[in-house]
Image 1: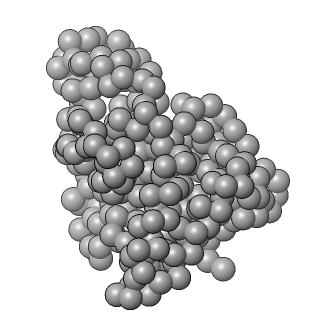
Image 2: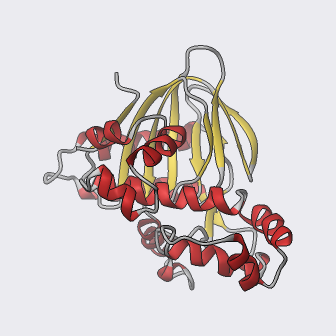
Image 3: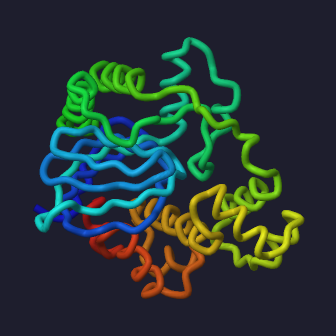
Length: 279
């Protein structure tokens, strides 16, 4: 099967991915919540939640903006399935689950990396949660668009999220104000050119102080964080059918080859192959 397959989903805000790869993925981020399951092989993942190993049957999770990597264990790679959930979809689901709107989540957008809820465990060996994932995956992937059993999909989604999401442990105020301002500036327009001098000056820090503080707060140096945000925007534009040349220009890459080089390193396939998989 192809290394990357995107399946149609009847539920807005959900991306379904089926992957088979022996590639080691460097540190990167996603804008969405990710829930998946390892079907074959195994991998090691390092993130702010710790380093873990995942094996067949394990459920794996990732939070929006969480820096993580993915290294195969063994020579034959691994096969896994993922459901990527837009933050606003999770917001609505959590409001239903808690029976009250969470105070800050209504203002969350796909370009923000913080939330009042999070997945606490990057990998879980739990038969009940695995069964709920399978229920949601089958309901999402097997139903043709336009003939969705929304009752099944919505019920399965709420059931799975109720099992996984917990209140966020770290307060948003833990990030220094100057660093939060710099991150918000990048999130709002990652394509715009920006210098270390500018970011450090606005944060009221020396360049070295800013570099160290930003890396500590986000898990990535400023330049790497900018590239990740540009790649996330590029991925969404390509999925919507934007040409690769226009995508590169609008996302702040020098040219199409510059986009391709970073895209392959992060996602494991070329932008053109990703475009074909999303059609």
